[in-house]
Image 1 (cartoon, rainbow, N blue to C red):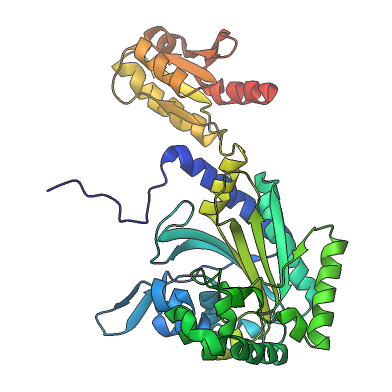
Image 2 (spheres, one colour; image 1 turned 120 degrees about the horizontal axis):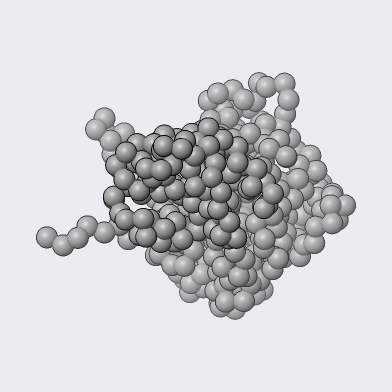
Amino acid sequence: MGNIQAPRGTYDVLPQDSAKWQEIEQTINRLCNLYQYKEIRTPVFEHTELFQRGVGDTTDIVQKEMYTFQDRGDRSLTLRPEGTASVVRSYVENKLFGQPDQPVKLYYTGPMFRYERPQAGRMRQFVQFGVEAIGSKDPAIDAEVIALAMDVYKSSGLKSLRLVLNSLGDTESRLAHKQALIEHFAPSIKEFCGDCQNRLEKNPLRILDCKVDREHPLMATAPSLADYLNEESSAYFAEVKGYLDELGIRYVVDPNLVRGLDYYNHTAFEIMSEAEGFGAITTLAGGGRYNGLVEDLGGPESPGIGFAMSIERLLLALEMEKVEIGQDRSLDAYVIAMDAASKKKAVAVVRDLRASGISADMDFTDRKMKAQMKSADRKQARFVVVIGESELESGKAAVKEMATRDQQEVAFGELAENIQKKKSLGE
């Protein structure tokens, strides 16, 4: 029997890379705290019906990409393919709409699952960070959500970014545009793929997002949603743009921008990477306003707006822009024991250093001193603490600063304070 490997479309984050993930997660947590978004953690699997209702029957996600299974009670469950539906389900189930301060501002980070062809930055299990602000229809919150997304990328070190905006209008505008699209595509719908044919009556807007028929001449001449926005929708979109201008956030309006999920209306946006060599699919994050989703899942009228971004694609963009993150994971002190008696003392010294907030390590394979020194070098230890027979007798360890090669004797009880002081002088 051969070796067992990770399933297709999944991967391991190894220690040399996990520091990058941790740095990004710290950036996310710090910014969300500044913006006063609170973390929510929802189950990795939900009832399948949640995504059928919350994401939409006509979407590729529900039709083709979900990992769905029957449990032992013969219930249909699905590994979550995205985060918004779960967050809104929790908002309704836990009656967060009853809180005095609205909107309720939430964020999540965690694995999502979609059965699709794996490619760079797009896997079957991927990590998504997302934000939902539920309970306000103020255009200013739309601008805040977009600003938070841009801040995450900029704080991570990305520079080649492009924000693309569109308005999908309110229900009245959407219905008028939907009818126009049906009339536009219906005479030639047999020339389109099976998915588009199925979408014609249900959700013709999704035809514009089709990858198979993107070159069909009718795509270029399809009625634009911008022409069907009523006065209220146009005014709303103008306010969102006004707030973004006030925040100094540059954007491009693209009337063809369509979000892939059924629940969006009004503001829709995507953030692209313009980094060289990023590939054909340049979208880093996407989001928009959903004014009917809470009601669809059994709650009161509570408009919301949010976005989701893939952490893998953020890491890919950082790589393309040659931005180094997660670098400083160096070791403060490596403790070397010369013999068995010294090893007992070394174990205690390592514990005491760690208790004082100093990262410390030692040898666990009983190697000779020379091999231990090489290990300290490889680990880029700033200090080496040597303990042998004479050190045990004198009650002092030899502390060597690796950069300067300076060495001094320090009492065991003063090691932590001594190293801490030298560390702060060198920083």
